[in-house]
Amino acid sequence: MRTRDAIDALRRPLRNLRLSVTDRCNLRCSYCMPEDTYAWLPTPEILRFEEIAALVDRFIAVGVRKVRLTGGEPLVRKDLPALIRMLALKPLDELTLTTNGILLEELCGELKAAGLTRVTVSLDTQSRARFLKLARRDLHAQVLAGISAARRVGLPVKLDTVLIHGVNDDEVVTMLDFAAEHDAELRFIEYMDVGGATHWSMGQVVSRKEILDRLAVKVGPVEALPGRGSAPAERFRLPDGRAFGIIASTTQPFCAACDRARLTADGQLLTCLYATKGLDLKGALRRGDSPAALEQLLLDTWGKRSDRGAEERLALREARGPLATQSELRAQPHLEMHTRGG
Image (tube, rainbow, N blue to C red):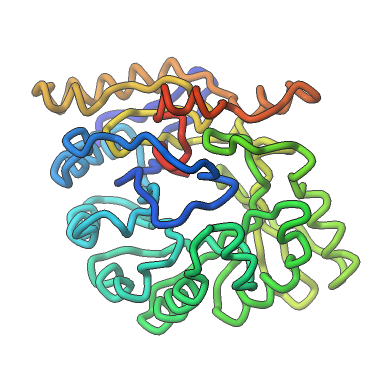
């Protein structure tokens, strides 16, 4: 049952929940997990499916309408379709999942049958050799097979591509063509200086402006589409009618419209992707706090929120570097992108 909407200090509602189900991943992408070893969350601390479902009820009660399952890589979580079946029964407008696609061919039928409304696949290149260099795993073919399989079973697909100078920035048109062939909308993502990106530098970022300028030269005028709302991606249309998006968190932050919270796999609530501290919802749940008490905790926490993390990072200008060092990440694994979810 809905109680009242959570509204933060800057009048932003809470509408979207990014829900991490695991901090494990079966890739080691250079822009996310570039180091050789990592500190993993202890298994007993990971939320059980019943606990996740109970917390999602509380988020729905204070205004959440969309849930996206993330990781790590969410498909490595055992029996994930069972969780999706539980969440699909709830009054949500969208129940989606972001994946690297490695296990998608095997699971896409079960995911769709369980009630998943869409899947977003991260794919940064059409080159097997580049994929191996980026992800440090020779699994490019599995990702392509997963995308094709999802399309066959009727599970809608979006594609996410992180562009990096000198790595894959020459594949802008190639990736758009691939997306069209697979009836998927592509979103280009600026390389972000979030936790885990220990080798990040502004010089590697392919900006929104650069993407649009390149497309204007290669394919003609690009038209901005209206109706973005609180969505992270600004959408555009190519001369041939194809739509695509750009998530420009690094160079043109959209903090003023952000309505997203993140719940880590061990139950820490983060009110910003750049937040350095979270709220222990798992502790409150496991000590037996009532549904009303948990909802009030969410209302109070979100009500105090004034985060504008991406804008604060942009303001650093020349002083801007990686959000955290490797030693800081080892001491605080919740800063890791693969722990907090995207």
